[in-house]
Structures are given as C-alpha cells and as structure tokens.
Amino acid sequence: MKTRTSIILIGLALFLSSCIVKSIQPFYTAESQYFDDRLVGDFITKGKSTWKFLAFKTEWEKENQDKSKLTKEDYEEFEQYKNAYYVEYISKGDEAYFIAMPFKVGEHLFLNFSPLYYDENDVNGMYAQHLLKTHSAAKVDFNKDDTIILSWISESVIKRLFNEQKIRLKHETVGVNEDLVLTASSEELHSFLKKFMSSEIENKWNKDDIVTLNPHDAKP
Figure 1: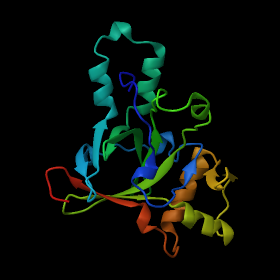
Figure 2: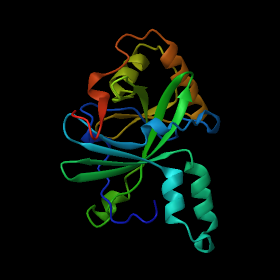
Figure 3: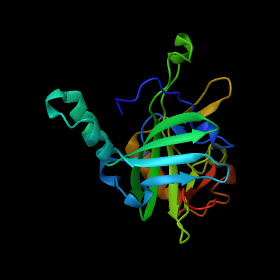
Figure 4: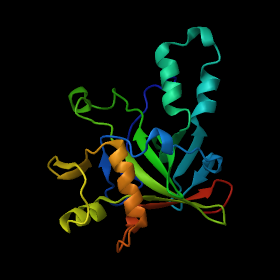
C-alpha cells in the first residue's frame, strides 16, 4: 500500500527452511482469481511468528477516501489487486509485506505471493538495484480446527521432476546458488499447477515448505 514507507523486505526465507520455486510471472490468470474471506484475520505459528491477512480492497478504500486525489495509477493498482490480500508477516521483530492473490486450481485454493517493499536506507543502493521481485505459489488448506495450512511448491521437488524429464516448463538456473527461476507465462504456470495437482507425484510436498497458521486467539 502506498502509505507504507521505509519497510524492510526480508522475504519468504524467514519462515521456510527450504527453497521454494520462484517465477518471473504470476502463477494465476485473471479468470482464476478467487477471494476467500476465511483467510482474512490474524494468525500465529508454532514458532510465534505472526501473520495478518487484510483484504486489499478494504484497505485501499480506507486509504483513498478522498477520490479527488486519486490518479490513474491508483485506479490501475486497485483493478490489479482488488481480489488480493495485503499480508503482514512478523518474526522476531523483523517485518515482511506481501501481496497474496488467491486463485483456484481446479477445486484447490492457492495463493500467489509477491513482495512489496524494502527499506532503501537499510539496503546498499547498488545491491538493491539487483533485487528482483518474483512470485511463489502456496496451496491453502482449511482444517476443521480453524488452522490453515500453507504448502509452497518446493524447488527441490520441481528440480527433481526436471531431472527426471517428467515436466516441461520454461525456466532458468541463475546466480552462484543456481536458483531455479521459472520463466513461463502465467497461463503456462497455471496449466502446470493443474497437472501437478492431478498427478501421482511421490513426495509432492516438502515438509520444510509448509506453514501452519493458528487463529491468533488460539494456542498454537
């Protein structure tokens, strides 16, 4: 949100032990967006990290009550993210802020995470010029005990499928750590997720890339 300034971007690495698959393009298409109000609220993990999911539309309208000050870019932002969540994540005093777009893959609900901000005062300017905001995808499961499970697509699983020639998807291996970055279009990525969810892949989910969210008023 544009009223947020000087925010530290620490990324998904804070709460995931492993590496998740990153993509240049979003994993969703315009037609697959699906807002679910069950995600709106405050949550806490076993490790005492806190999550807040806010409806982007609601927060945008609160911040932009004076319509006379709105620009074309403001309205374009609203149209782009009106079905999304604004996500605040705090762990050990460090903060991260994301846009999470909910979308359907068949009967399954997913979230497309993309980072929002970093503090240019805390990050070397030259270093910041090399940071690229990518996308990740997490499956959402609602449990009867009101907990929510977020399961990210793991890089180790996808690399294994590439090595076994079980999937074909545009990608690159970049950096000294040889990180896997998907370069396919959003339509291709969404189609891939459909096949991924319907397939009988062994060890499809890496436990290190799964987070359990408990309602904030419940004991994790």
